[in-house]
Length: 228
Image 1 (tube, one colour):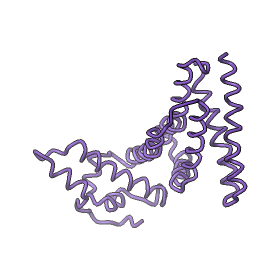
Image 2: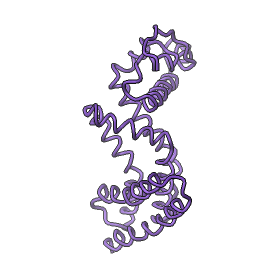
Image 3: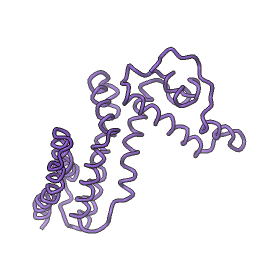
Image 4: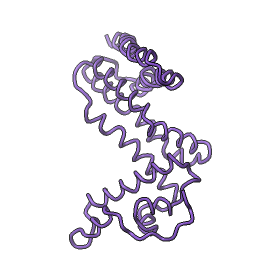
């Protein structure tokens, strides 16, 4: 992206809505909409062009706001980068948490495994992973700020499922965080690695689909048997 940009006037529809709010003050909805717009632009730009390929001027131009408006919301690039990554993770997980089925523990884990696998193979997620890898290497202090969000994003839904099962005495209550991490690796990390290493092979996709129910049965055999 071109870093030699002149100051951009505020032409964002979200910003116009914010400024036209009653009494001249932005409503929470308008302010949140503008923030989301900025973060969407920032996340897309950083994922596509890398850390050094994007300036705050570029972000402001793409979001159709001035740099002054951008700086009133984010103090510097690091703050914007952290907020954009957290926004991206939340955007991925919110729809999934809203559609989480009720019912037997096996069905819930099977659903979450399949859905998280599908999400993890999307180009935007792969782009986000590449960005995170670059940040971890070159900006460890920034990566430290988002590491808890990343870990929470990977495990929060599985933890919620296990906590519900523990409340029903279906599994042991202790070490749910550890169990969630192991389950995530078994249901998502391992089969995903195979699919990425062998892209486009239908037999690999079918193997992954067959693998999940068998893996869940083995997991449940262990954690449910311990609770009895």
